[in-house]
Image (cartoon, rainbow, N blue to C red; front, side, top):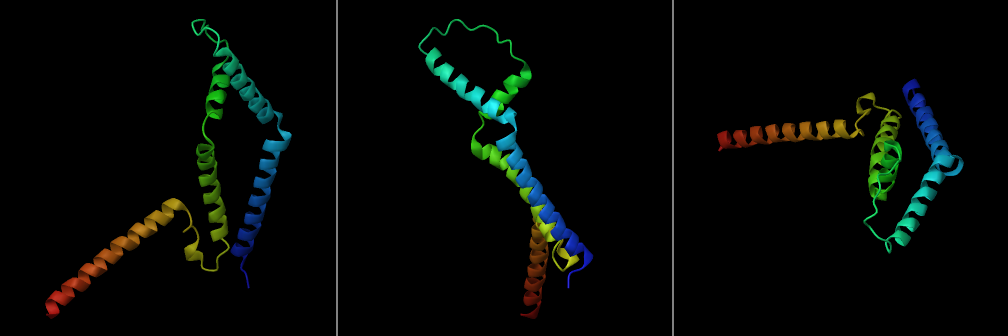
Length: 142
């Protein structure tokens, strides 16, 4: 039988997945901002290819704002960078919500990367201490 924390964990997982699907749908299907940025990037790339044959000495200062410049530079980042930036926090929140569905409340949060690393390091230190104590006992026994 599930307790209240587990039920709320499953509701949180469901709502989180539903919200993420809605956000992805909004970004790629409904929002015109993404479509316009992608189209402008393609037009710039096509314009740059035709401009390469022209003279490069006519470089005038751009009248675009720093926001547009930042957006164009961020769009040039490779896909794996964007996937890493968005996937790590997304998975951390998902795994935390999923860990709330476990029966044992002491294991909640072990899936979160900093906590997982701390637990692994603590286990390693405990294991090293125990192995040192065992080796000392063996030296005394012999």
